[in-house]
Length: 159
Image 1 (cartoon, rainbow, N blue to C red):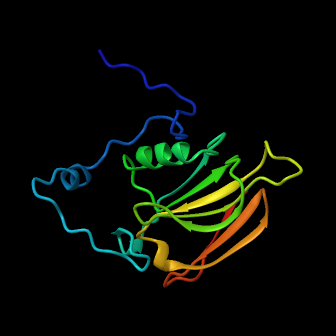
Image 2 (tube, rainbow, N blue to C red; image 1 turned 120 degrees about the vertical axis):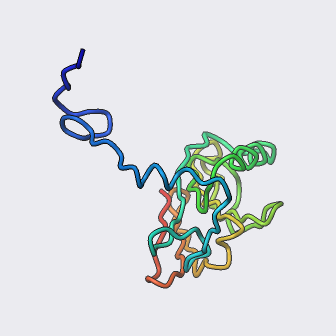
């Protein structure tokens, strides 16, 4: 018995039925041997002639202690990432620091007048550190990092 297709917006945002994937697409996913990964202009994976950069944001609620930051780095080993924007870090101080493992953290933290709030940071993967052109601190709530690529210089803004 065939089911009648539902009309309306689905979770993927498509109207009506979703199209079935082509055989070519499915065949591309079934490699028995590892395929070479060419790198792009940023040193990141390249697909269809364009570099792919994996970025995310995360509300940490706090990474005040070094243990909290180390726990976050352990979790990040499970995913593919290049730049992570962190908010509500609540760490003291500002600046660019190199972490164990070669990753960078660029941060602006708490102030003396309000020691229990604010704080932003950008966590930069060790593979991306050589492409960081410039970093700017605007406040405890906003920092900017400029990355150099062949296509230009995109700015990563963490608020």
